[in-house]
Length: 93
Image 1: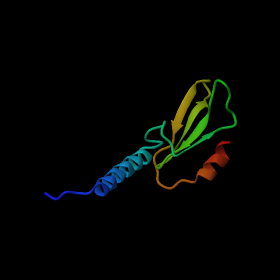
Image 2: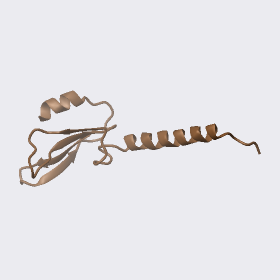
Image 3: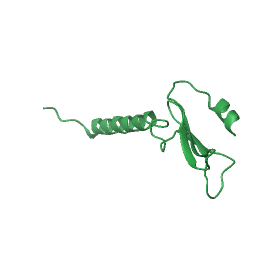
Image 4: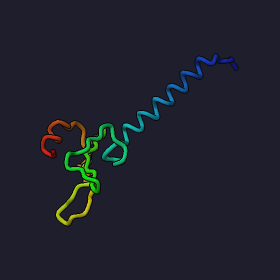
């Protein structure tokens, strides 16, 4: 069996780190609501409510939104590929 240099192991470590980072961005919002590529805090935030929009790889979620029943809700749009964050923020805020 051939002896490998430490440089090869460094490459293996970098590949493993890249895999973990790719996995995290893939399972971002709306798959996992707390992990986001971009999080925007809305202007209607208060000390009680911290409304925000989280953008992920396959969609976006609106977090801590007041509904008609005065309860805080999280709403995630269906998963899709190809959305426009500027248009979404224009309609929300």
